[in-house]
Image (cartoon, rainbow, N blue to C red; front, side, top):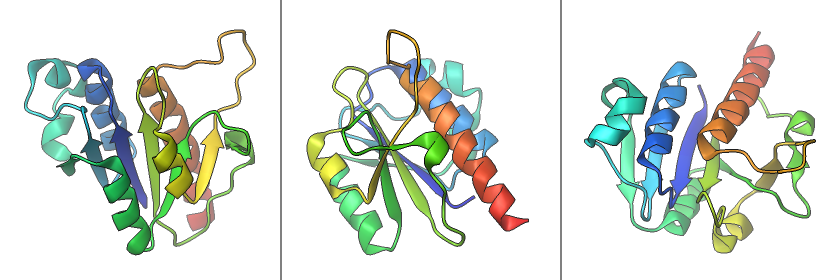
Length: 157
């Protein structure tokens, strides 16, 4: 699928493993593990990835912003998944046919770095209706990747 995932300073090894598994399920092209985000092989990543670290293409990068700028230069549309003032709600987001998207997911506490948000083509927010307005990053990844994947599948048919 025309999807790439960028993990911006993710702390939890279990979350990283879950993102690998979700990425495998929905045919994500590649995962960029940036900043403090740990890389395979690691037993805690492996525990939740269930082998997806062997099937998924991934690359480590020290600087998330550099990866975002590189992807932009390659014609990839970069979308930060974040709660922000001018964010497009996920249910209102319509992907374009024949476009590759990089979805950036941020740190569990701080979110996506502001410089990365600013360099993104778009900010998308998951609409939430409860009192917490907070989802675990692995859950956010599952929700967004499935939504965009299913919308792209409809465009294809």
